[in-house]
Length: 204
Image 1: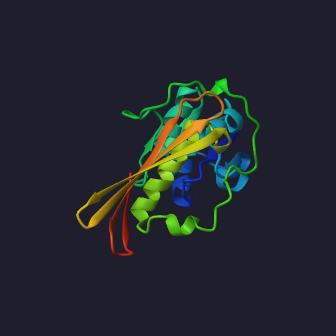
Image 2: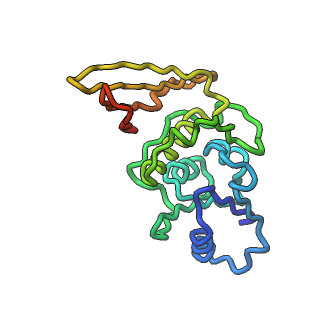
Image 3: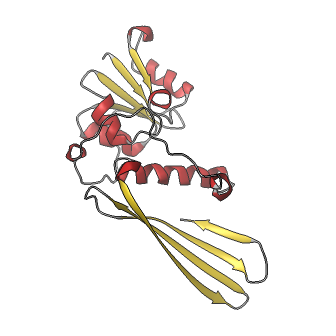
C-alpha cells in the first residue's frame, strides 16, 4: 500500500483509529490524500475512477461509497461513529446497477457549486435533519456521477385546503444529460395556517 485516500466525512480521530487498525508504523512514508482539501464534493464514482488504484486504500464513513469501492475491485475500510471498522461488503446496502466506467470524465479541483444567497435560510434547523439532507444531496450527486450531469430540475407544486389550513406539496425531479434515468430527488410538504405567516416544513 502506497496511498491512503480519506473521505470528507472522516474525522481526525476516525482516521487515526483506521491507521492504527491498518498497522501502519510510519504514516509519513505513505501519500495521504484528504478529499476535503484536494477535490471537495467529488462524487463516489470519480473517487474510484481517478483517486484509487491497486496500491491505495479508501477510508470512509459512507456505507454506499465503501461497498461501491469494493465492488469495483478497490480496497476500502468503513468506520462508523462508534469506531467499528469493516473491510468487507456491508449488507443491505442498495447500489445503482450502472457501471461507473460508462461515462468519461476529467478530475476537477472542486466539485462544489456556488450557493445562492437564500441557501442558508432554506436549510432545516435541527442537526439531524441537516445531516439527513446533506446525505440525500450526496446520494443524488453520486447517482448522476456529478452535478455537471444534471441537465434540468422539474418542480411540481400542488395545493389542498383543509378547513383553515393549507397543505402544499412540492416534488423535485432531476433529469440527466448523459442517459442516466431521471430521479425523484425530493418531496416537501408545507403545512400552513391560511391567515398566519408561520410555516412548518417536512423534509422527505
